[in-house]
Structures are given as structure tokens and as C-alpha cells.
Image 1 (spheres, one colour):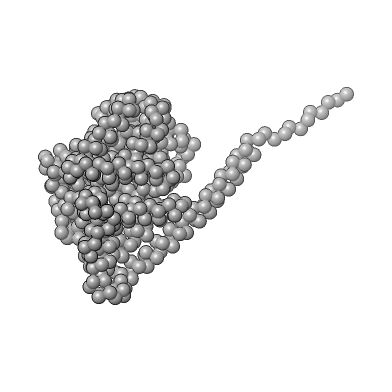
Image 2 (image 1 turned 180 degrees about the horizontal axis):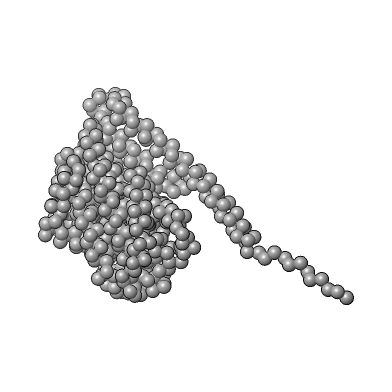
Length: 523
């Protein structure tokens, strides 16, 4: 397992059919990604129905292309509108928008595309080096898989911010949704209210489209069209040789930072891109240019973003643990297409796994090629009246949801999930834990029941192997870290605030002119 398998995956992807759907996914993803406020999570959830009728490999390749196409579409809005498509694009707005204001929006977009390609390339290389260790996961039985599910639940603290109670509320709602239907172990109806439509549970696609798509539409409608900025003109597209020389180091450093951070489940994209930005600002000889249009402020964070996007899929492929909202939706797409992400993926469907990994590389090449000729097309899209865009999106969601099972009931599920997601937005409750719970809940319950059935009710089965004990230790560490994280964040914020106040006082003192001695007068 290694680069030979990657070459085999490239051979699979480089067929006309797969290339066509990768190209289509990139274009669709960029189109949805440039819509103000719509990030990759909303884009992928909206477009899952597009892949129905395709084989599993083609469907996942297209969805992956939609994922990073939407991420780059978010970069376009960050540069031209100062609206980050997702949290990880926040750092790009700091200098990308300033470059656009100076008439250098084109070079900023091209540098962002080059950074994304380098980050994706390094991410894929790292993926290939880490993938052989997935064989260790083949030793997992039902107890180990149950503990992996518990670990995924424990990691919701990583998405909790400063309010773990809201994350736990989100998990509770997700588990309640996942429990609807007939219990496969006991054959008992749960929360079905004698409605046949609920016997098989609530549809995952309808829930995801509602939680991320419809809630985003409602949030945008609440803000109104007046809150949408007009895009800045791109101007000249190609960067200068100086831009490229100044970006080379940030490309590499940002890629390494993003790849390492992506291996840590729950690593927030905003923190990763800001860490790359802070590093470039610290080591640069042009630190005073940051925040005023420094090209390094675009190159580093964008490389970190894409490397993070690739490496964050490694826990999904090896352990079946989604590490972000977008990866959680990808996990749902795997399940919908009959694939089980996790320990058995490389054993049972190695050709699919390696084709998807190879498609990450091919898709980044496609985005690099599409960036320059389509930049002005996306600006034209941004000029379409806001209410027309929202109407098209709502119509697409209704048609997509209905097309899954041909059931109007799924539309009501989507609308209900959209209301829940909108309420979560209003009260700042994170949505990612809800989606993780919906996806991991059935896996957790099934493996818990299987473990106790195999051990005849003996709970010590969860301590019966070295892998189980190790997972338990990691779970405890994750819970303790999640509990201590708000305190650590508060202490760090206070320290940064004191340091900033001290630095400001020193600068003011240095700028204050010393009083001159009064001139003596002779009388």
C-alpha cells in the first residue's frame, strides 16, 4: 500500500467519465461556494442528490470535487467581498481583500489557487505515507468499533467553543434523531408514532440538506440583500515574479502546518489558517505590510487550508471518525453510496479508496486550470439579484430532497431540520455535533449491542484488548481536554490582551515627543 496504489487510483480517475464528473463537481462547487454565506458544508449537502444514479466511485469523486471547489469559491468571496466562505478563509480576507482594493484581486486569486494546489499536493503525499497504518485498524472488532464511536462523540468538545453545554445539547438532538425508527437489535419501534414513513428512520440527506442548506437560506434571508457587498473588480489576473518568489516559502510552511493540524480530530480550520498567518507575519521581513495587502498573507493560509482539508479526511478513512462538518457530510455520502468509511474501507474497497485519494490531486489541478478563465464568470454570478439566487437554491433543495425516495414526507423532514438549524444559528449552538451524532449514533448502538451479545452481558469486553484500553485512555484524555479547553482559552485570551496593551503603551510612549527645555531670556 503506497504510491503504487496511488498510481492505480490515478489510472481510475483519469478515465473520461471520472474526469468529466470531477470537472463538473469543481464547477458546481465553485458556483455554490461563491454565494455569500454558503461554505463547503452547505454546498455538499445541497448537491448530494446530484450524485444519485452514479456508481459509488464516481459519486464520491464528484462530491469531493464539489467540496474543494466550494472551498475555493469561498476564497473568491473572501478576496472580492471580504466575506469568508467558511471560517478557515478568515485569514485570507485580511490581505486578500486589501490586495483587491489596490486593483490586485486577480493576482490574489491566482496565488490562492497555486497555494491550494501545493497544499493539496503535500496533503496527498502525506496521505499516502500515513495510509499503510490503516492496516492496524483491521484488528478492530465490535468492542473497538464501539469505543471509536465513543471517541468521536468525545471529540464534540473540539467544536464546542467556550460553551460545552451547547455542544452537548447539539449531540443530544442528533442522537434523538438517529434513534427514530425500528431498533435493529430488538425490533422495537422508537419515536415512530405509528407512521410508516418513520419505520426506517429519518433520511440522512434530508436532515443534512435542511440543517446546513435550508438554515443557511433562512439566515441569509434574515440578513436581507442590503448586507451583501458588491464585488471588487478583478483587474489584471497574473501575479508578478516577485509575488511568486515571496509566496514559495509560505506555500511550503502553510502546507506542513495544515497537514499536521488536520491529523488532530476537531482541529478548527480558522485556527489553522490564522496560525499560518501569524507565523508568516512573525518571520517576514515585511511584517508591516501584513493587513495592508501582503501576498504572504494569502499564500500561507490558503496552503494551510487545503492541506488541512486533505489530511482531515485521514481519520475518516482509517477510523471512520468525521473531524468537521464537511467531512461529516462526506461520511454520510459514503454511507448513502453503500461504503463504510473506517477500518474496513481499504480492505473491502481499496480501489474506491485510492481513486478518491487520487481525485483530490486531480481536482486541485482542475481548479488551478479553471481559476483564471472563470474568475470573471463568478463575479457575474455575484451580481445576480440576491432574491433570485435564493429562489433557485430553495427550488433545487425541494427537487433534490424529493428525488431521493419520491416522497413528499422527506421535504417536510428537510424543512423541519432547516428550522432546527436556523434556531441553532440564532442561539449560537454548533451544528457539527448534531451531524456527527446522527452519523455515529447507529454505529455506536449497533456495536454496543453486538459486543454485549458476544460477551453475554460482560462489560469487561471493552477492556479485553490492548487496542480497547488505548482507546479508553484516549477518550479520557479527549474529555479532560475538552473540559479544560474553555479555561485554557480564557487564560490565553487574557495573556494576549495584557501583552497587546503593554505593546500599545510602549508604542505610544515611543511616539510621544520629549518636552524641550524652555529657552532662557536675558533681560
